[in-house]
Image 1 (cartoon, rainbow, N blue to C red):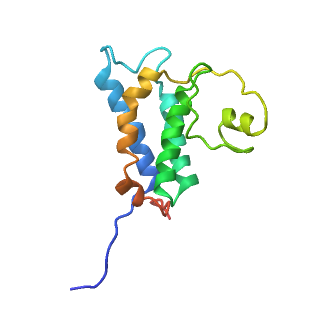
Image 2 (image 1 turned 45 degrees about the vertical axis):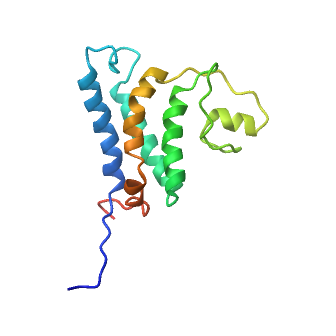
Image 3 (image 1 turned 180 degrees about the horizontal axis):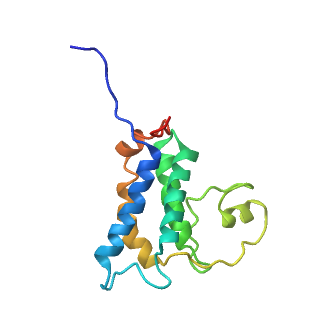
Length: 151
């Protein structure tokens, strides 16, 4: 009847909320098991908020390039797992003003400061499927305008 194509868009803030809720759900589901991601020194609500903020920021920084959006989000998770013995900064931007302290130091010809992981590699492996699901190209395509519900 109409010659108009309608493309569904997703609110970037709601997509970031999916990550928050996904991690919360995973915490509850895995509580009391060997794979538990909750408890002392593991994934706290503060860390979940931080991960959600990193997720939304990486989408905003890298839009409309869906591959860069994907790599940015995955880099934020790997960045949180990085240690001095096992740096995980291969997807982090390398520049003198990079958000990644490690690659920023390298770009400035400095030695990176020692750093401890915010989450363990084991927790990162548990979270990676959720991150991969929330960086699928179809989902990211619906976010490239970085529209929000309010504007």
